Image (tube, rainbow, N blue to C red; front, top):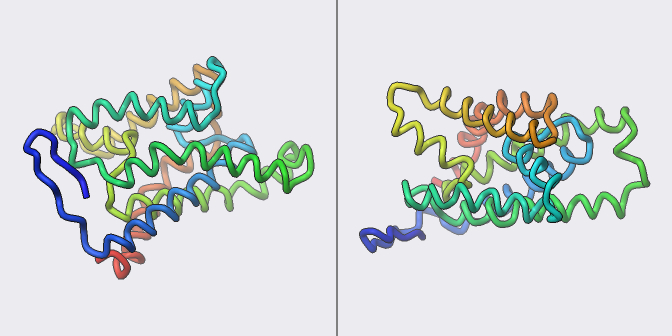
Length: 216
């Protein structure tokens, strides 16, 4: 359920709300676990996390806290421009993804031997599984249809304002901007960053068809 503060309207929950909530929660958890591995193998992350990593180089805060603060900045613009983009998925991704990632980083430090992620062979063996978990988690949370993170919502809002430019171009420029800013701040840019840009869209489309039976 979400609220339109301007018109004071309450929007009814979508069909199979419980299924959607479970899908969103599982998706954000899987995405956070995948992100923890991507951060550990140091072969690049998604553009948003890349910027967050850059910010952590300049402030004495955890990755999760920095990501939340970065999201809060963009969240202000989402609230101002389009409240319809906000939902439980927005809060789940914005508030918890970074902390879930930090939690799993701690789990790996307890379960795996010291220096495990510094071995080149281990890093490349984990590359595709880590990326797959991250992408599938991101796709599940988005397919739940309970709102988008501020990072994902703003490209949609911008594309509505710049009608002469396609959404794909707007999203690409958005990702490149965050990636460039993250790189300048010392964030992790690598092969994963490129793979996320190319494969997230197709995976979301594929998962949406598979999960329709659960949320339709």
